[in-house]
Structure formats: C-alpha cells, structure tokens
Length: 230
Image (cartoon, rainbow, N blue to C red; front, side, top):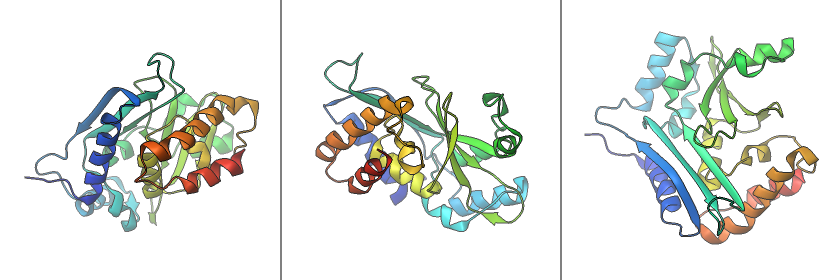
C-alpha cells in the first residue's frame, strides 16, 4: 500500500483548505492517487533518463508527486457566477507531461527563436475546466542533467519564462491556490500595462484576502513581487 509522503500530504492539505473555506466557491476538484505500487521519485527519474533520454536534476525529486492528477477550480465573492477573483490549476503527472508533444499549434506566429523554445515545451499545468487558456510548461532538453526552465502561456499575450524552477512553482501554486495570473509575479511583465488590468486586480484581491483566509501561509514575498510588477 502506498501512503502519501510529506510532500503529497501538503498538497492534500491544500485541497482541503480550498474545500473547507466557506468564502470560496469550489466548483470542481480532483485528487487521483497516489495509488498502490506507485513508483517513487528516484525510480521515475531513472525511467525518464533511460527510456526518454531526459535526465532531470535529482534536486527536483524533493517535489515529485505520485498523483495521477490533481486540480481545482474556484471563485471568491458573494456571487458564484461573478467572483471578485478566481483560480484554477490542473497538474499532470511528470512522466505524462514529459512524453507529450510540444504545443507547436498554440504558437502559429512564433518567430524562429521562439519556435526553438516551443519545440522543447511540455505542458504540465493548465486551466481546462474554465478554458481560461493559461498553461505552464517545462522546457525539456535531452543530453546532460538539467533543471527545466518554466514557461507560462497566456494567449494572446504571449509566453514568458518564470524565474523559479519546478519545485518553486509548485510551492507558489499551493500558496496562491492557482489564482489566475499568479505566474506573472515571477516574470518581468509590468502589470501596470492595460493588457494586464484584470490580472492586477485579481492578484491585488488575492493578496488582500488570502492572508486572512489562510494565515498558515506567508504571503509577504508575493506581495513584494506584486508591488514590483505594479
């Protein structure tokens, strides 16, 4: 029998935080596994290296999740149909993500340098329940051990590299609960631009409300990032 390890327990707790928060309207959530006989991080990383030619930094094993799927969709506000802000996340298993095809069709107007990046992207988090079009990808390279770059897509606003790795992404995702646009806090994008007005409003609301709803988390670093982006 496979039991959740401490890292997975933190994610189970994160889902419980959403489900048990009376101020949030959780429209959907799912947690698939970890199941019996699920291979551990070391075994999975070995398989990816041997069978797929993808050698990942062993440091990433610390945040590896054995779930077959994990996600939630929610909104905050008195009106469920018109929330003050909202969010969604939908995490794919690492092996499934690495073995996907690159999302070339998502970027039909990419320049040649951008096409080189897109060819190495593999989606691992997205917003299929709401159709918001937010997708986060690993930049997977073959040859040599590497810690994949993290790229965020918000069509038609392009795609941006985040200044965190996979473990940093998952840590921030747990704290933000997938609030739409939280990834911009880890880019160089100016949220003062009118194209990001709604995102700035969502993040401002989130960082005003969440410290009270979820006092067990530290939101000060994210608040500092938002101030820098504004």
